Amino acid sequence: MAPFAPANPMTFLIRLLIRFYQRFLNPVLKALAGPMAGCRYQPTCSNYFLQAVEIHGPWKGSWLGICRIFRCHPWGGHGYDPVPPPRGHGNPPTSD
Image (cartoon, rainbow, N blue to C red):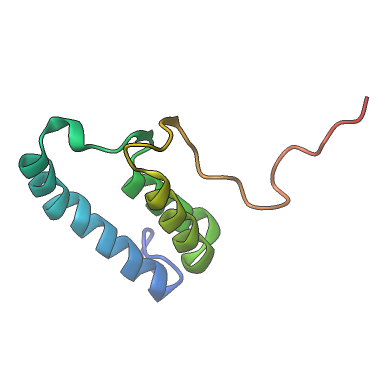
């Protein structure tokens, strides 16, 4: 298997669609809407979507990406918003 080939064909398709958006549609949208029309979050919504699919798989990753896109609007939040880690991989709660 190739070193960068995803194990799941659905993951490949999602990545292909997001890369198409990033490469061709996003520059057109920025040219039409102006320089302030970019994403309010870091990483950008499309990069967040890619990371979520890579970390959580195509179904949950897509859900997280769609939820993030709905949060990205002029009256929403902004700033650093990373993809949450998979369950069971975070730091366990500490008791004092």
